[in-house]
Amino acid sequence: MTQMRLSKLPPFQSWDCRACGRCCRGIYSVPVTEDERSAILARGWADDERCARQGLFTTWRNHSYLARNDDGACVFLSEQGMCRIHERLGESAKPLACRLYPFVLTPVGKHVHVGLRFDCPAVLDNHGRPLPEHVTGIKRFIPEVLPCARMCLPRPMFDRGRSVTPEQLMRITQAFDSLLSETSLGITRRLLACASVAHLLHVSIIDELQNRLEEFLAAATAVALKAAETDPLERVQPRKGVLVNFRQMAGLFNRWDRVEDATGTAINRLRVLRTRLRHSLILSRGKGGVPPLRTGFPEVPFSTIEEPFPIPTGPCEELLARYYRIKLAGMDFFGPPFHNYSYVNGMKSLLLTFPVIMWTARAFAIGAGDTEINSESLCLALQGVDAQLGRSLAFGLANERRRISVLSREEHLRPLTVWYGT
Ligand code: SF4
Image 1 (cartoon, rainbow, N blue to C red):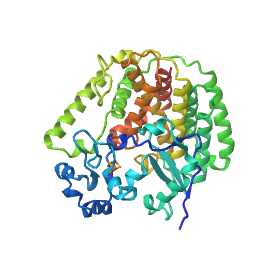
Image 2: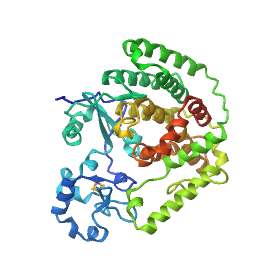
Image 3: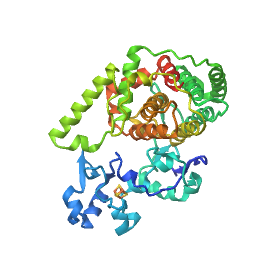
Image 4: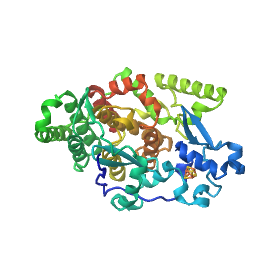
């Protein structure tokens, strides 16, 4: 039996709920366990007027989710924007997914790591108490979220079928974190340094490295930092085929996959499928305007997104660095939380989100008539991309895994990072 401990919570991130209700109205479908489903039914919610009209649950692949109104709001959300379960029965009566949001708990070895969802506006704004002040509250969730976590977990899959100890994985993650914390470099250069180290880890023979990991990490991070510092950041347009695949991936990150899209009537499902196919064709061509990938997505000309943009600085740079550091701390970018990608592939996929976020933020900035990415366009991009990351089942499909694997190779990831990061 293993005693799970909470990993150190990063003090640079804060959070407290502002009761904006966005999580109850967003694309997030709230999963409910069988017990939670029974408890809701036992409380007589099925007779509630609004719930009776809309139904209480949506079922998909043997999992239940809270039903939502046509406007996307949870059936339990009142017109005043309050949770009616909370109002009537108190917070503890709400489904675990609602109580836990925006935290994500991931066990690795003897530690439970805490990630955050950046589709929550308070997380984006760094609003509230620093995370270390949430330790007691988060600890209470551990037995509920990870009932099996006291059993031995398998060693984390590192790369190409090889595994490492959780302690080694933590050490490697700290090395990436140190690169992201290098404030003397702009965010694009920091992410290029991370991509170099990820590539070095991929081509190295991890079995041989295990005994000299410290030495390797010290050398690899020093070399990567030096290379990133002197990189001329020359904008060379990625090859046409790379851009076609990249736009498809950007489209996937920016569409909103909702449970209702897969469970509605046959006509609705067909309509969703046709829209996606149409968008996919437009993204492939890359001519004319970007299709409305989700509600409010700006239909700006593709060509304008390819123009040079200043590297985000100030609050935008801080937000991006914070985003990636929290993703690292959360350890939910690989393994079971991310379609069983290995650590290295998960890391490269995470780094690939940078050009996607920049592509998206450019679209929002251009749509708003701005010539540079500001906090508003960046937040809109981050909210959309992070909502899909790891939650869209599409990332687990063979063709998307292949696409990510190709685009995250060093020869493509670097040019994409520079092209959209400068
Ligand atoms: S159950 Fe309550 S907290 Fe959960 S999504 Fe619905 S309204 Fe929001």
